View 1 (spheres, rainbow, N blue to C red):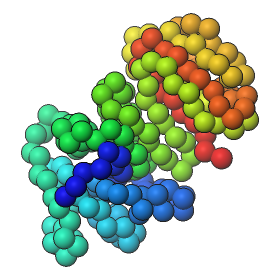
View 2 (view 1 turned 60 degrees about the vertical axis):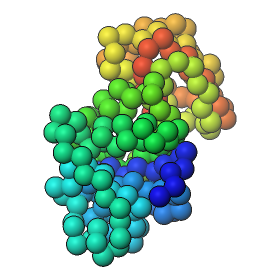
View 3 (view 1 turned 120 degrees about the vertical axis):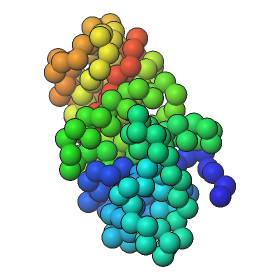
Amino acid sequence: MEIPKHATLVLNGQLPVNKTHLAFINDSSIIIAADGSLNHLIQNKIIPHLVIGDLDSADKGLIEKYNVQSIEIKDQSKTDFEKILIWCLEKKIQKISIFGIAGKDEDHHLSNLLTLNKFSQKILMEAFTDNYIITPIASNQKFKSFKNQTVSIMTFEKESLVQSKNLFYELNHTKITPSNFSIRNKSMGNQFEIETSNKVLIFQEIN
């Protein structure tokens, strides 16, 4: 299988209802299912190219029926999400669009956000839910936006110094800690910019 530079990963959370998101997944050059998400994808008539994980949840009959390439990784010290990101790094994939990050089990949702944060300096990622785009960053980045888009900034680090441009409540090397201090801000136009000294997650409302 030829591996493209941009991959789509579907985790075993809630599949999007948003038809644009479902079409994006279906049209992707490579769709990677995280173990049991294979079952939900096929139920929604989306056939992944690859399933990766410890394969304790993926339906073996579906793998055979739809000729899905499978990679079994038994390492119990890592989540399936982590295993897939490491595989993507080894295959020199440069960007990943992630779906199924939220919903179902709350502990998995939090774990997935922690994993986004952990790998934010190693690979470009965007995670999509029906309500938000979640982007992990660790330096400076410009974001496409729209006026009055809700923008929240969160960190799992001890502290991050954050500077913003074109948000309603501007941040000027403001110290962000693991708290609700920097949530529910607003974009002032069709883009905004965030500069941070440490890893943060940017949440953007979907119009």
